[in-house]
Image 1 (spheres, rainbow, N blue to C red):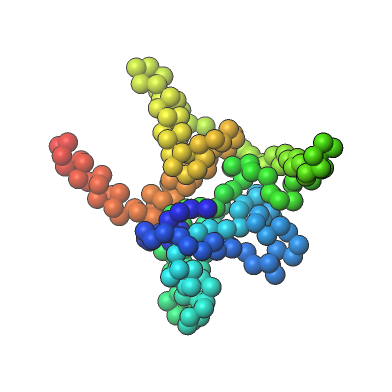
Image 2 (cartoon, helix red, strand yellow):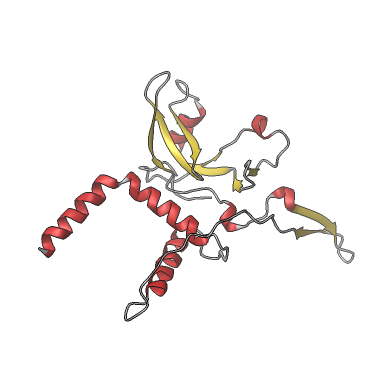
Amino acid sequence: MNEICAEPSCALKSVHGHHLWARSYLRGQPYEWVELPDGTIVGNKVGLCLVHHNQVTGEIGGYRARIVLSSGLFWWEKRVDEETWVRVGLLSSQPPGAARREAPHSAVNTETCPTCGKPKRKREPLPRRRSKTWTVTVPDDAEVGAEILDEWVDDIAGILGFEDESSRLKRYHVLSITLAWLAQGREAFQRDVAEAAERLS
């Protein structure tokens, strides 16, 4: 679980593991993993500090924040009034998802070792997700574009926790998360681009 609170602007240490889906919603699914309607398997826990955990559990003064799933990513929203919620940004730490290909509890069979009698855990592969191909044309002269992009993807994958991932979808998950983060900081990005253009002119 993430060590720093997943609320986008918080830098405090996470002290509570917040379950994204309640047991009543899961109806028999394993509590630590959730299978979404499209077959994606995601972790059901994210670390929060005490203050932000209280905001999403409604312990004091009702629910003041919530975590929502949109376009495959988890977002933090805060409550403005009884009917209005404002999206603050992406969780700074996303729960493990299908890209990591970690087996959920339901995909683990338990057998007994004939020698020591202890249970052995045998993992079964998850079903492969449906996918499409989306290509990018890159230069292949003095600038080897494919190698440059692969280096950036591998670097960012390490930050996001996908460094051991060999999935065909690793590039997609890295690109979707980083582009969504960039979209959230659009104004700062535009200022940086404008300042860079001024320095070059």
